[in-house]
Length: 414
Image (cartoon, rainbow, N blue to C red; front, side):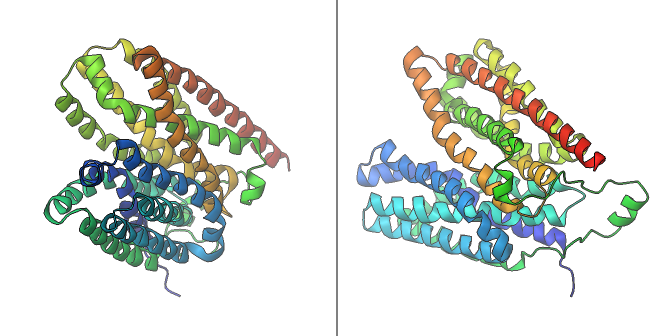
């Protein structure tokens, strides 16, 4: 049997992630829906919140489906749910029903998001034993950059043809991209290695990935190191989402720029969310996953305590850029870290369980920031609070190292 091209597998993964990542461009629909139906910001925002919530749930519950039926079937399932979710959203707009919108965009679209997010990732880890971080970072970068690509297209379609037609068009186009991408996805044969890599390993020029264990998802959740990773991702995402949610008013408050300039700044540095995904994940192949996460937390502890008192524009922008890269990098490096700690046997299912941290953080982060702003009248207090949370994350990243050391000494003694 002819082995598939692993770079085309990676491209297929990017195709799926670029499609589902368009969820981050949801804000393009906010004003049009408010103007059409007189819905409040909160009513419109519920569609997005439900989608992110169901992303987390479906990633957790359907991770086993990905492992059992393979990436192709999982990708096709994702394409069907996401496509129907978008096309159904067009129908909901025509019927002027927000509850139908919640059902189609939130629930069905959200299920498509969750399965589509994890479907290609465990496969990529197996195709790139030599560059685990870079491969998963590439796909997850697609998710991060998607909003930048989708936003102008959505705006054009909404202004030219209306909201319902926009949903129909996106539903059909994304379904086709995801369908074609899924059909190429496949796991490599057991023990497969890229050309020349085996020779490099045998000559000592390269290291084979030494997984510390080969656990099922249900075995993994019973270990301490699973929960250390969960806490690390939860805190990184909670604090990152909170800053993303308030970056515009925060910039106005801290460095005194206009609303328009703050909006432009937030859009421009949002690119670093995508760049951080490929950059940090690729770096993790060289410096190791434990060092990568410890670096995230040390940097962000310093930044979150300094940000409230920073009024120098270039320094403020520079610190926000670092936060954005760490936020994206946290998502992109976690699948490779899971492979290192739990093996590739049920990586998709374990990744799904860990992504519940994202669903929880999506609800917690913006709420925390808004609550502290309401009670103190400033975002500065929330930043200090998040700086404290990063101290806990740093502690978890140190505890996971102790676990790794113990596992290594056990396997050496065996």
